[in-house]
Length: 356
Image 1 (cartoon, rainbow, N blue to C red):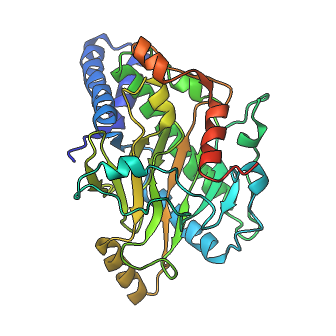
Image 2 (image 1 turned 90 degrees about the vertical axis):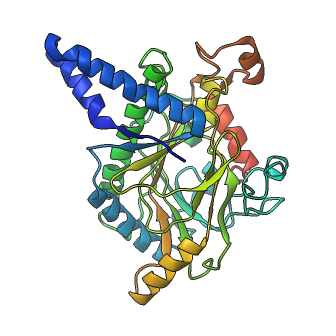
């Protein structure tokens, strides 16, 4: 896929020109900014994802985070830091707890070159996960289990600082791209960001143990879409992520050095009345993954695949429904208004995380 790389430095130049009220340059900078916003909107509509370059984010931050999460997953018992009574929305989720929704009908419609490797019916995922809340918590909410204080593992002293640093950078990037998407869709620039304030944003690294699940073709995360608004990833040390465009084409994903990948989730699908579709994806052990596993074995490096993922959410008490200019009668019939917290509850029950 020829997905454009969006340069967030254009965003910062535009904001600076607004503050300085520079008549000589503001018009030119505004055109450049609007063009970059349009790239965001087109990429989200056409591919369900966008690649961005954020000057606030360094590969050193990502590496520090990945190093720590490798140590954590290698030593976790999967129980002490787990909170199943809160649908695993904070703390650790061990392997074989989450199971993707059944999308067998959709998978069966794909041609042979675009079929997922995920089994039908879906099986429980081999991946682990850790959810760490980023950003402020609302003072009052109808959905307290989705807005819990984070779990703090006792074994890693730098945990809180590292998680907050990386989580803060990821959520900052999400707010920026959400504002640019709104401008690109000809919506007020705070359309999405105002609804994201006090949302249950989750830094959500996944962990996959290649000592146990390292055979070719093993499915680590089954064919699924993300239930949240936008998902952002830093670069993983192992390949294996595959995505599908809205027209059903499958491709492997390699995030360019120094860049971040943003994927559309179900909540932006609601708010745009299906103009943006939640992107389907799966994570597998591919031939490229095997090559990296063998190289890591040779140098005695960690064999845990960690994704530096962050889930950006709409605030739990906000209502999800198609917004102008996407609020056609057809869209409103298909996307019936629902509180975000209820939408999340329904999704968590469907993927076996909420077993209440």
